View (spheres, rainbow, N blue to C red):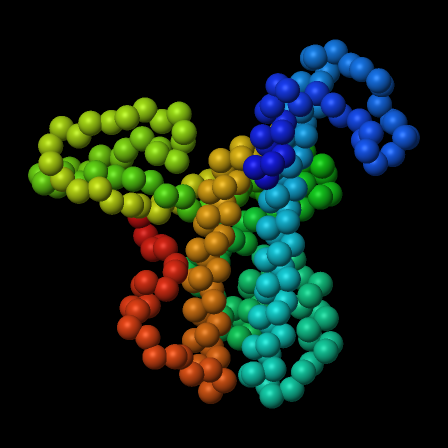
Length: 251
């Protein structure tokens, strides 16, 4: 994503022909700066949206492998038909099936389930939110958690600090002594009927960070399942469970 976004934002990058790969050119030899900038803007959106779709594809493959392994552990056999049926499910239904059939879930699984309707809109309607995407008049919604910094003063007052993950964030000064901390609140991106699903590179980075920690959280649930069925013995470790990966689920 960084390569694509940086290329789209570079004023020096103006060569859009595949001169090193083919002599077949589908575009004019030159275009106006306005047209070229529009192409760059659209390319930037495509890079970010493609990154999100790849997250979904990878998660689907991840859940397929979990279902395969844990089903064998639970039943002591491979049910090819059941596995094929599972692999045909969408991401949200895979998460539901693992919870209902095998009891494997995690606190943030519901938020990750919200990714799949967004993917469907991108794939089937090129990102334009249609009636198929919204129910009861509500917007198409993507839910995830993001890091926020807070300052807790000695008096007990809690102040939310500027977004330090934003390179353009301004500095801040606290009025009284205290301590810095992290919160992990839920954030929603809403896309009403008729709008185009788009993410900023920063938003996708936050989604990737949340997904990364969700995997730690879910992996622990899988290992707990394997341990309950006698298929896994945890190694000796001095680490507390809270130090192994997942973020808190409460603000």
